[in-house]
Length: 253
View 1: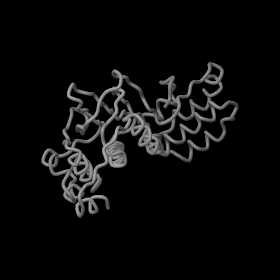
View 2: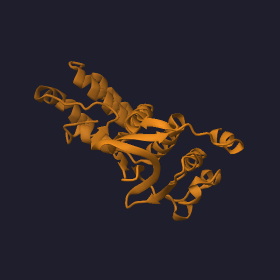
View 3: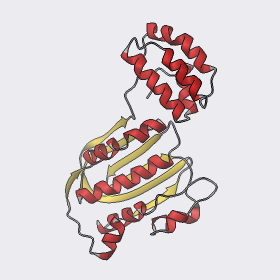
View 4: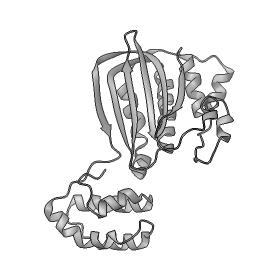
């Protein structure tokens, strides 16, 4: 394990300019399957930033924090990543997910080795083991700190690193999948099957898949939509399933 390795040796840091956006794109692309299963999008609000950090270690930091955010996010919400530069070339970064709170007594110890693996309470929160321990070790080796705090509707991890902004703040959304837009003719064609699907509960998977199989694959949009209905059912994503089959959304991601 990386934690064991770095505990036994000096944490060697090879600092160099690294594009924050390139690291985020690489890490998020590896999360596509679970993002799709939970119908999550990643909302990035950040300056165009170069971090001054060890590239490989930086990648591991974001892998652990984003994996943690995805794991504890509730379905059909955003994971929000914010990065802003201050005047003294310190970058403030936060990663927020919507979901269960961390028990108050664990907000500090969650970064301790092994302790967090045993923490669980009635909220359903249970941390990921040594990942957060590595994050604290790595960020401290860069001369900075990380902390966790509960928000009104989720959990926020925030930390700092050296870096500088190349240009001003921009915002983008990385969705789990491309959106699907139906034409009027396609909506009319699908309506009889949607009427049948709307009378089913998301857990009635056999009935749902049977109806889906009867829908003709006339267009790519219809084929994609059929896949999304099936994915929503198999993920027990009641909110997304209902939104699709009841026609409450024009953009399905």
